[in-house]
Length: 179
Image 1 (cartoon, rainbow, N blue to C red):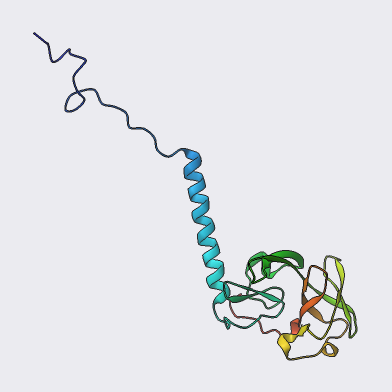
Image 2 (cartoon, rainbow, N blue to C red; image 1 turned 90 degrees about the vertical axis):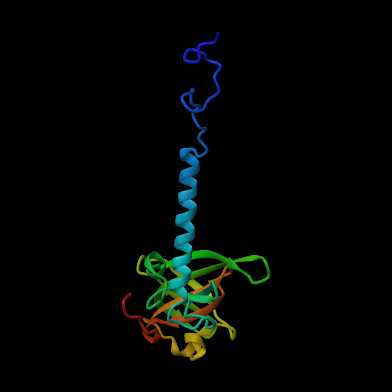
């Protein structure tokens, strides 16, 4: 006769030996999932903030299109935190044809300006010469290059060859309240 209390072949169930469930998430998987969630939330917040309060079709002064709306870099811009306060930098954007292109930005004081070039010096000493042509948009299209004079603070957006695509005089850029 079999003793059910001492029988080790008993099926697990009520009163039987319990199996430990397998761990399905490692600490690394949890950390990666949390990082992805934070990244998605941050990107969504930046996009929503960038699109708020401005036209979704307008090219912002010294700005680039992102998520359908402008992200304006430099003085008076909508970009928050480090982007808004950036002095100069380089970034990659979609070219609209499935590829990518490098763009540059600089906020600084004009040290030289002519019909074909502009030189800006940022407060950290970084100085750059940019070419200017008829396609360069000045103050959102409302001005010509001759409206930019030495000593003015400007934000310049340029392509990878330092051809200025947009120049914005900081004194013509309205500042948003609450920034």
